[in-house]
Length: 282
Image (cartoon, rainbow, N blue to C red; front, side, top):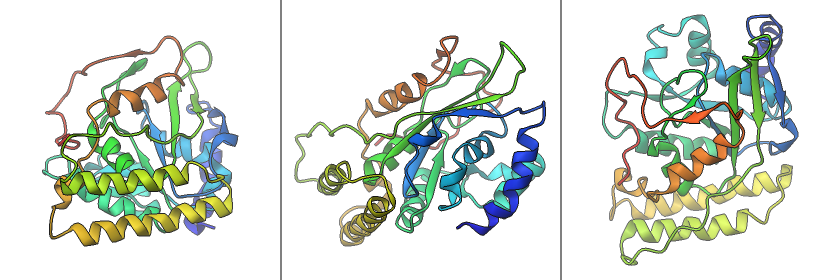
């Protein structure tokens, strides 16, 4: 049981019931029994991570969830909730002004997943206006291709036809589809990807119960062994950029189908600053 979450949980449920948030959710039964798995969510509010965590409360009692989070949170730019997330609950930090951040985050994520944790990612990289689903960056797609665990899709939005509260819709876990085999079969990154693909095919046949998820965590050790063996042939920056060019749209569709019909996909948003450098393809 994750003690820090247990301590904070009563405060979370108290705030979630307030008119400002009035959290409601569906699909909690879809979540695996425990980690390791990846949570894929759009980004609509400043409390999305907390809302999703409370919506899968039973799982959170068994496994710790760590979100990829921008370092601005550490600097106090997201208020008390941001401070709580960074210093108490924990994150995988992302410096959006630095290069090669995604491979570093993927490596940290693998370490946590092998311990049965849950990784939470907003692939949009920033909050989008109400009713919009922004383009996904390659950080999540590369993580999903590097590890044989299920992905739990989640849609989050504020209800506009009623009280304005936060709605969370939890979808059915899925695995990435088979990767189209490239011609460069001898490349180290291709060998790595094919090993992960083999483990993924085995994982897909496991139950999402306690025993099955424990076996998935053990398989991540095999992935990390492969990483160690290939470190002299290929850098992490290249090894963890093995997503296919169509993967982002595949992942975005998984979230889009959970959102209200009023939502629309957008190609870009009105950035107040340059888009983060996280998530280059290859």
